[in-house]
Length: 98
Image (cartoon, rainbow, N blue to C red; front, side, top):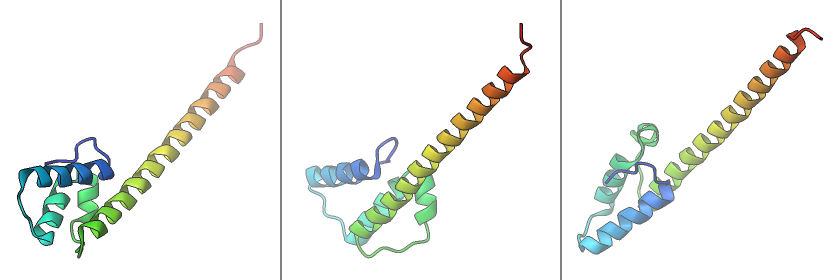
């Protein structure tokens, strides 16, 4: 099972639901490794060498990375928008008056 476009919360919930429906029992260690393997590549890469004692610890770490990524994306969008606005203002100043 892979995270795809799901949030970390959605991915963990879906994993738990699938596990419950399957009736399969997994050790905490196996759950952690399976969940880590299914995270988005950018999150998985940052957690690759981290050890977790509980699924909750892994989930919290993944959510923190996800939040930082969302904040970074938001800041990049603001900078891109401001840059485009400055570019348009510069073009307006260069136009000859009629």
